[in-house]
Image (cartoon, rainbow, N blue to C red; front, side):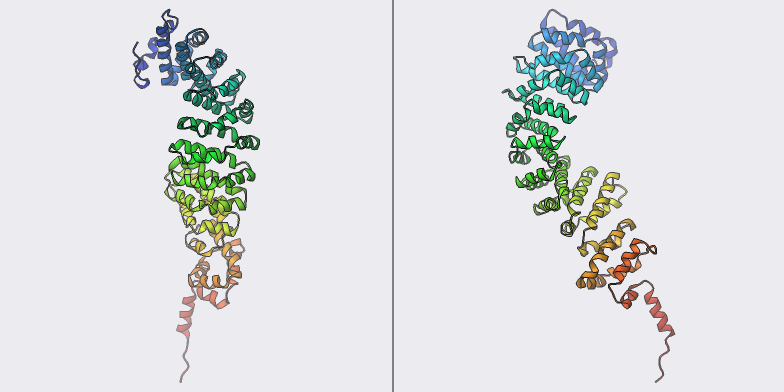
Amino acid sequence: MHLLPEDQSPWIPNRQAGVMSLLRPLLLDVVPTIQQTAALALGRLANYNDDLAEAVVKGDILPQLVYSLAEQNRFYKKAAAFVLRAVGKHSPQLAQAIVDCGALDTLVICLEDFDPGVKEAAAWALGYIARHNAELSQAVVDAGAVPLLVLCIQEPEVALKRIAASALSDISKHSPELAQTVVDAGAIAHLAQMILNPDAKLKRQILSALSQIAKHSVDLAEMVVEAEIFPVVLTCLKDKDEYVKKNASTLIREIAKHTPELSQLIVNAGGVAAVIDCIGSCKGNIRLPGIMMLGYVAAHSENLAMAVIISKGVPQLSLCLSEEPEDHIKAAAAWALGQIGRHTPEHARAVAVTNTLPVLLSLYMSTESSEDLQVKSKKAIKSILQKCTYLPALEPFLYDAPPNILKHVVGQFSKVLPHDSKARRLFVTSGGLKKVQEIKAEPGSLLQEYINSINNCYPEEIVRYYSPGYSETLLQRVDSYQPLAN
């Protein structure tokens, strides 16, 4: 039987024509190669789409596969495990059908097979079942898969290591309890030792598994850190493989988000500077975890936010904000900049001098921005403005900002001007004072109070001079003025 590639399968239109019932007896054929080829054909079909995978389930083929999986030779075992994986990948319902027919125990037995290819096929099927949800993942754990998967990552074959690490990642991701099961089996130490493996695909899976463990809680993140992944993991941020970079950034992000102490540890290892370099060396979604990591670090404390500023994180984030086409990446950069600028006037100034505020304002005002981007931009502007005392960055906002943001801008001027004579003079000559007189504020509102505070910084005639209509009043006085006769 000649097998075409998945996307050219000739059986697709004829699936109702009983292909399954034709293939099923071939699984019981006395010739082993016919059995294997029939299983492989079923796997290709099931892999193609979920309708065909469902037909495999409804055709009552799974019990036969599971029975043969325990009895047959290694070639058949690989083919049968491939079918189970192909069926189980599509949906939780189809994965549940595999669990219900008793496949997990047999797949776990295959993890102990002497043939690495059989182990790999079984690990792949188990990972595909576990990835859907916590219940299915728990079923894989209950079948005893985790300790054997940890043994598989210690085998010499790179392909087997990859698939086993991927399966451990899929089990760990759903809950702290499931991640703890993987930790209790001793996985962290073995995973951490392989961070510098030359195989890029293996590194991706290793970093992903450690991320899925670290993300759940402080305790789990600390266990990952205690396996001495720093500074080793930072070398992955310079990797040629984009997904190794992305997964390394994700791992660092998942550790940084938990506590100031864990973030400080990353700073001390040189992690912040390394992540900033990494963001600069890539584009698009690969940047996203790094951008978020900087936001998490900066959110914890003034000192940690300052560490991001000192490592030149702000210009890099501003660049992402301006040049990334995707709204969700811009939104992450806006959020991170807000976390950096919200602490003190010094932090706010570090963000303001990069000319980031006008970009945030235009993203907030743009009708083309996604709702999330508008919300994140507005929050960032607000939190930076409320600390910003760097007046040159604030002044353009007097002309461009909508009323809800203008209020915060005028508020900042009302805080700074009473204590800074140089700024008061500049505010007049730059046209700021004139602009403030043109703002329409509700009597008794907070905005009106801010305007009054600013006006109180100047002699009354200066304020009058810059008030709208004052030149008209002066002209009227000229008209009505009677010169003294000589």
